[in-house]
Length: 494
Image 1 (cartoon, rainbow, N blue to C red):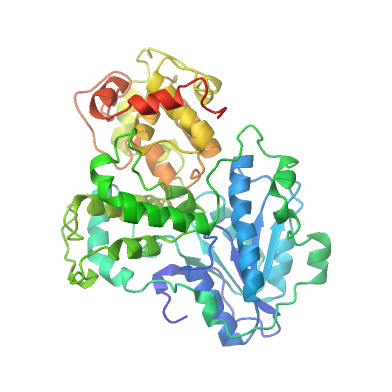
Image 2: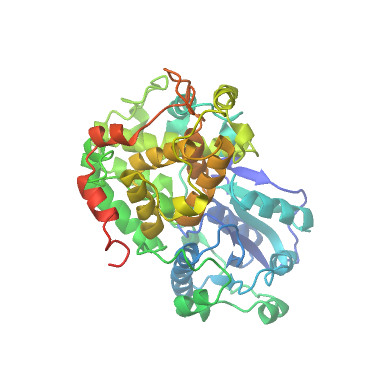
């Protein structure tokens, strides 16, 4: 436990562990992995210190915001994988799948009341802050949340970053120290107590262990009160799939990242964000994998502060520098913003200059006005936008470059910026498998000026907000194959 960076620890309430507690409870909420997980490592440390069994509790509500077959399958595939692995390792695992909204109410309180101490995940967005605050109020034992989100701990920053540049300067000052304090690759290997945790009988009677449901996911999910129009995707929500994708990208595709990542026809982005969002893989291990390709005489200890410059910090090629900047700087900028701003998902959180220029152009005539339903069904006049939305609907993702254009057009085609923001959040969080993430909110709010600056010339509707057009995209990036696939009448039926 001494190795846990203190900036990662959030002590939710005071007091000493309950000496009569049956177990140490790790409540796995968002970093749903058994490796490279600071929170699990911390829980193992307490189990060893108190000489008590470890209980890992992982659950899925039936009524979480934007609940769909797509997200449910992704989550449950990961839980099924955990059940198999933890059965082999003889660690007590309690998966619970709510079958109707509200049926799980009271379970976490009961499990916590029988624990010596409760450990969970610190996460600055979506429903996790509310979950943690609610349990903090009702817990009679110490409740500690641990930040396993990125390379730099959330508490290392004092305020919300205003740009990627401002956060990058912090990264370059702190990276070597933070990277040198990595999470353990296999924290459960150090667990000393082999006796199974005794789960309260009343819990199992009222909230049955989900083992049997995890054997037939399609049947179980099919009868849940979730959005069944947004269906399962090919991507699997397992750590095995995450590792396979990481190895393929790093060892076969990374060298082309700098040259091809912006071209939809090439599709050479990492595609790792869904597994990062659900915590199936850690950014630490991805960075570690990338570093394995560095020359033998290269070392992180050699890195020097570059004053926030985008290139050169890692002493690597353009592709490696670009990918690591996306994984660390851009991804974590969003996490640190959400950590410091509870209004991260509200229009009022935009910079003053952005709100002012958008307000100045509220009365500008919009060339097209589309309803939410028309946008959701990709029924616009723009073939590029329709292709991007079709990809999102069917695959749960949009190519990174086109995601920016996709958002800018919604700002242009809706009655006002507030409506545009509402539509974009809903479209993204319903369809994108990596939606509901701090990084998702960074991308959406960037459309409206967050982490950006004022641009000229001033334009209708956008004012000083950065402007993008489909015509410009066609001249800058290769799109022919992409449009042919995602606007094909056969797409989605294949």
